[in-house]
Length: 218
Ligand code: ADP
Ligand code: ADP
Ligand code: ZN
Image (cartoon, rainbow, N blue to C red; front, side, top):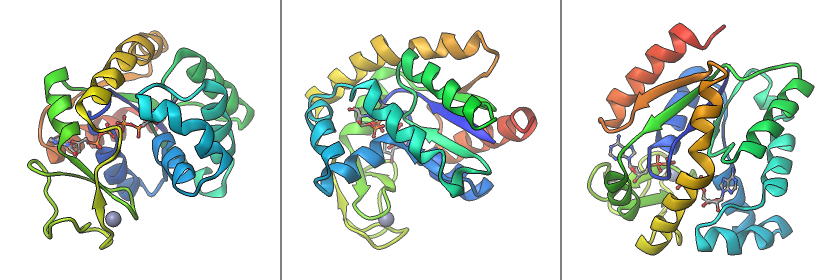
C-alpha cells in the first residue's frame, strides 16, 4: 500500500502516520524528519534546507524530490509506505508519479486530513517533539506521562524552532498557496479520501483504518 497523508501543518499527519505504520508495518516517510535530521547532523542537505525551514518556506522541489527518490528505493519501502509531508507542490506530485512509475507502482490513496486554521495554531504552539524518535506530544491535548520525556522511547522533548506563532502563520500561508491545490489534483485522479481531523486522534485513526482497509488495498 502506497499512501499519502496530505494536510496543513498541525493537522496530525505525523501522529496518524506513526499509528498507521505500526498497524500495517510499512514505514512512515517524513520529509520534515529527514530534513531536520540532516540539519542536526550538519550535512550539506541540512545546510541547504535550514534557512527555508526557519522562515517557514518550502525547501526547493529539486532537493526534496531527490530525497524521496532515494528513500523509496530502500528495502523497507518495498511493501508500501506512508508519505507524511510530501508532496507539497504540484511539481513534487508529478515527480512522485514518475518515481513510482519507475518502480512499477502507483499511489493507493491520498488521505486529506482537514482541520480549521485556528485549531492548527493552537496545536502547533503547544507541540513538543521527541528528539530521538520524532513522536509528537501536545502540552494540553496529548501530554507525556512524565514531563519532558517521551513515553515511547524515553528521549527528551523539545519545541521545534518553526513552531513559533509568526512562522506558523507563514507556514499556513504557504500551505494555502502551494499545497492546497494538491487536493483538487488528487481528487481529479479519484485518489482523494477526506478525513475530518478535528476529532480525537483515536477517532481519526479509526476513520482512517476503515477507509484504508475498505478502499485502498486494491
Ligand atoms: P503534523 O505532522 O500534521 O504537523 P502532528 O501530528 O505533529 O501534525 O500534530 C500537531 C500537534 O497536534 C501535536 O502537538 C500533536 O500532539 C497534536 N495533535 C495531533 N492530533 C491531534 C488531535 N486529534 N487532537 C488534538 N491534538 C492533536
Ligand atoms: P509539519 O509537520 O508542521 O507540517 P514538516 O515537518 O512536514 O512540518 O515540515 C517542516 C518544514 O520542512 C517545512 O516548513 C518545509 O520548510 C520543509 N519541508 C518538509 N517537507 C517538504 C516538502 N515536501 N517540500 C518542501 N519543503 C518541505
Ligand atoms: Zn521518543
